[in-house]
Amino acid sequence: MSHDDGPSMFQDQLAEKVRPFIDLVDDMRSIGIDKELPLPTIAVVGDQSSGKSSVLETLSGVALPRGTGIVTRCPLLLKLCKDRTVKWEAVISYGGKVFEFDEPSEVVRHVEQAQNTLAGKGVGICEDLITLKITSSTVCDLSLIDLPGITRVAVKGQPEDIGVQINNLISKFIKNKRTIILAVVPCNVDIATTEALKMAQQVDPEGTRTLAILTKPDLIDPGAEKNVLEIVHNRVIFLSMGYVIVKCRGQKQIDENMSIARAIEEELEFFRKHEHFRSLVREEKATTKCLAKKLSNALVKQIKTYLPQMSEKIKEQLGEVKHSLSKLEGGPPLEPEEKRKYLIQVITDFNEQITQLSKGDIIVEENLFELMRKEFTQWMKCLKHAKSHYHEVVQQVVDEYDQEHRGSELPGFSNYRVFQHVVQKLVAELKRPAMTTLQTIRDMVQKQFDHLSRESFKNYPYLHLVSKKNIETIQEKQSNIVKERIVEQFEMEMQVYTQDEIFNKQSQKEGTAEGSDHDTRSKYPGLLKAYYEIVVQRLADQVPMLIRYFILKQSAKIVCSEMLDLLHRDDTDNILQEDSEIGQYRAKLQAQADRLLLANDKISSL
Image 1 (cartoon, rainbow, N blue to C red):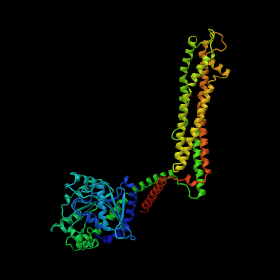
Image 2: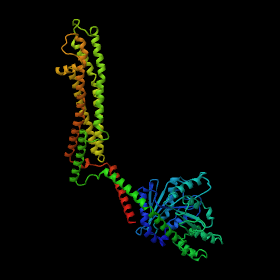
Image 3: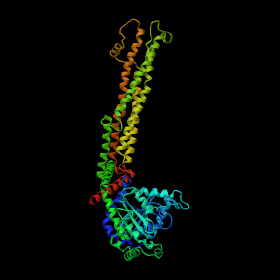
């Protein structure tokens, strides 16, 4: 079918009234609000061969797939947009694919291709939506969804439950209380038995959102006209939105290439001259022009009813989008001088955070100082746990001294070196858990430093890479320093030394009297226990202090210094190069925010 100006007879009255509301709903659908809040729409339902396609092509001015059996195999969202500056253009989208074309005669091919892609070749159906947007100076502003024709019996190639599948698909759309049901029913059948109206009554028992279209009035048996009038006048099955009777092109007129504009003229002429139906024209219950007007009024009314809910949903989503945008920041300035100031601020912010973290003034994910405290407590438990073993070994050496450890000394004398070696050996065993504590704390600190780097420079891959590398290098270097200091500490412990005053005080605490000349060897366990307590006190604090100072405090200070060195470089553009995905995501969010603001403004104006 060639494109013509068929709908131009009634499109202007629709454009002025419907377009703002149609645009609003389409905008909301494009930003995904329909996933959470069903939007007002018109769903076209009818038995196979009810004349559904003829009604749609008269309203849209374009030919859709025709034939016997199941022709509409996927839901088709038909969006008609009047634009006086555009001759004719269309966009069809489905399954992530988008195709643009400017020939009306290509509509059938594109729709059939879309259905074959989604539902497979043959006669199967699919729930995936096909969207066909037509923009032209000769279409009316309207948006509706064409659904597969209702069938009862499966034909060759169809699953046995095809009827159930189609019914479920139709129900999915028409059960939404915001959907206007456009039930297409031929005049020459018993209206009470039509599946379209039965399904409509199931989800809309009061008929408040169902508009019935009676088609094929030229095929009514003589004498049955009065029955049709009874139906149109709402005396058989009551529908609040009522009935409209239309006469579209028949197959003979299509074969003769009658234009839609000519068909609309003939339709009006048919009803004006019809003995029984001429009054329906005056009552605005007949012709496609009247149908378009009723649809216009019904859709506008439905949208107005749900504007408050739509407005609230828009505000809610706008708040979420703005929050996401605020987390992304606005990106670096374009001016070189401003960009340099921005880099200084970005690095300064990071340095301030890492400094605060090293002082315990901020918490990143988990409280770092609390985590370190727990680990240092484990170190203290390790020291205390080693005491019992230490005491056992010392006591054993004392008990077995004459048999196992005595050298050239006379009986009753003891060799100090023997006990010194015991202390050295047992204290040296604590070096391994000290190193384990160091590694654990280093992992904690590095993890939190890395987190700060990731969060501070998430939009800037180069800064994140440099800071992460700096953190790792500095942590490794500082870790090696602490290892050396711990090794030094344990080497110093090999001296087995403390101030006499300190040792004597600790000995008294352990109940070992000083200065006794009797049973000297029996005092050794107590004296050595007193010395071990002194060692424990030294190591309990010294190891954590070394770790905290070099791994946390000094590391943070050096990281800050290394990051400030970036300010001496001239390649600010490279340093502040944004992640392409971040830029695209920001642009996507900004576009979504703009659409939401526009939709919000439209709601306010409506």
